[in-house]
Amino acid sequence: MSNRDSRASTVDAVIVGAGFSGLYLLHRLRELGFTTRVFERGSGVGGTWYWNRYPGARCDVESMQYSYSFDEDLQQEWHWPEKFSAQPDILAYAEHVAKRFDLTQHIDFETEVSKAHFDAATRRWHIETNTGATVETQHLIMATGCISTAQIPEIDGLSDYRGDTYHTGKWPHEKVDFTGQRIAVVGTGSSGIQAIPVLAEEAEHVTVFQRTPNYSIPSQNGPMHLKYEASWKQRYSDLREEMRYTGHGSIKDLNDKPAMSVDEDERQATYKERWKIGGAGFLTSFNDLLFSQESNDTASEFVRQKIRQIVKDPETAEILAPKTYPIGTKRICIDSGYFETYNRDNVDLVDISETSIKRITPTGLIANDQTYDFDSIVFATGFDAMTGTLFNVDIRGRDNLALKEKWYAGPRTYLGLMSEAFPNLFMITGPGSPSVKSNMMVSIEQHVDFVTESIVHMRDRELELMEPELASEDEWVDHVQEVANKTLFPRANSWYMGANIPGKPRLFMPYIGGVGTYRRKCEEIVADGYRGFRFEPKVAAAAAE
Image 1 (cartoon, rainbow, N blue to C red):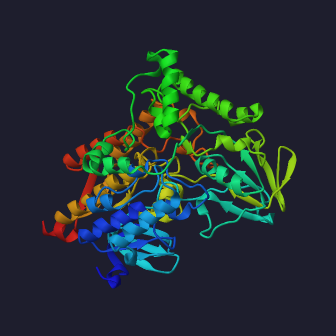
Image 2: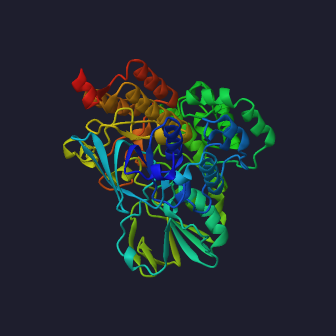
Image 3: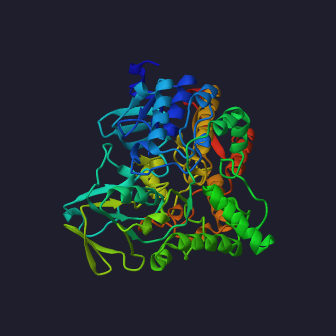
């Protein structure tokens, strides 16, 4: 495809986003002969890893498992320097992929899609961007990511603050020098837990404002051992296939025993060994930690005791020890020296679980009736996950129905891929799919393959529109909640539930039934003639019949 074709005003497919989803979509659709237009609001590829440049940003999936599997040469040639990769290395990988497959020239950078309206008369989506570009397309594919809309809390006085403010999800591209500064960090989710140890080494003083403590497991990160890397590259094909049918899309050492089926000594020994290994595999210490409160209590208390052992000040340790929700029901965090950081003389912790931050002042903030002065404030306050970025675009389907209006009580999708009344609108890792409860690379590839194969299915059969049946969508929405309610996940006010966004409906948004289970369901649906979807033929073809 020529560069001129990539800027055409009428294309087969518009892709929104040039992260790992968008890049693979572009590659596949080009190979299959479809014309495309890709819009990316950033100035480069990488998606999440383009924006999240905060100090300490790192993936919590092992490097050898967090990469594409679609090209064997790509798998073999790329070398990860660490067990858990840092943001610069993951961004470099995305840039390498874009260059290797000649993708960059086909992407409109620094361009945001503002409107996407379906026209029933033309059976096409009409796209408008903030640059004034307009495009007509048969297929609209939202590859916008699950956690890509930064959430800054609405605190009185924020606009009056005279210092610098940052959000971990929209970090400056140039290095920020905090040397000699007194800084505040608001939030102790995953990004805060990664950033705080690094910030504490540089700043004169760090004050952490914590609303909800988080369970965190040491990553035990280190350089990539060449022998370990070789063991993966020698068996990549078989290991990738195994990953696709696991519970989380990654290979972990699973224990098939319930926690209470062994005695206390064996339980403690198991937890100690998993802590020593590090990483999210701690949650697979036993097979029922996310289903049994009694079993979960043993793992939760083990981590709380670890926090008490690590943090020297007992009062600080208790503030850091989560007690109001089961371990794993909020995103399990992976850290490098997080709890140890609170032993530093230049780090303080402020508990705002009951009173919150009262207001921002021109020189700092007020919390717990105390006034603090800071040179900079870092917001590690997360994202409007799963739906926020979709709602940033004025998406309207049949009869001018807004997606935001249809989803007023929570997202409604079939398989997390499509929503009834929005023909040919596809979502990569949308709500109702494993998405954020999986190794995202595995789920991305599976969704991209499903979407591109569906588009080929339509082309080969002269079909023009694809849309879920309402009954199938309703059944899937109910199924997603039924599966979640069999677990402990609804017991936490997590961003999985939309609890971090005021006014957002509270329901579990990802599909927690397992990556492998979900993949098999998709395979069965396709094998059964795309059960639950309806297709409409091209108008001309229908008239000829």
